[in-house]
Length: 118
Image 1 (cartoon, rainbow, N blue to C red):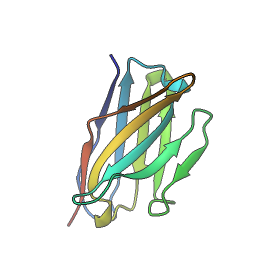
Image 2 (image 1 turned 60 degrees about the vertical axis):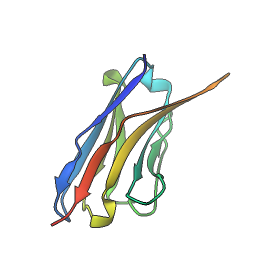
Image 3 (image 1 turned 135 degrees about the horizontal axis):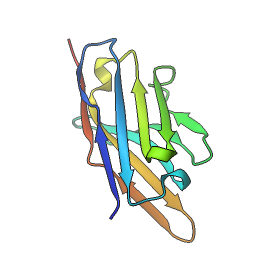
Image 4 (image 1 turned 30 degrees about the vertical axis):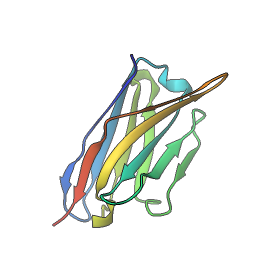
């Protein structure tokens, strides 16, 4: 059974930092293309940061220079370091893992709430 479990969300003041984690089980994490997405109230889910299995990263313009995606394949864990947080970063953050081969499989976590407010 595949599971992605996010943690590390919470309430933080503007300018603060948080580190999100996504622990994966039931999959071979190192061959997955992975990413973080977020969804704010009343808005569509949007891409935040992606990392291909080869290591190439891609960030949304709104988070470039502030967020960093990384992974530990030995621990089957994905991370999102978020610095200089802004109120507009408030959202539920989801991790995603995709496997593309003869078939395509996509897995999502349940989400973790990040609230940036003074």
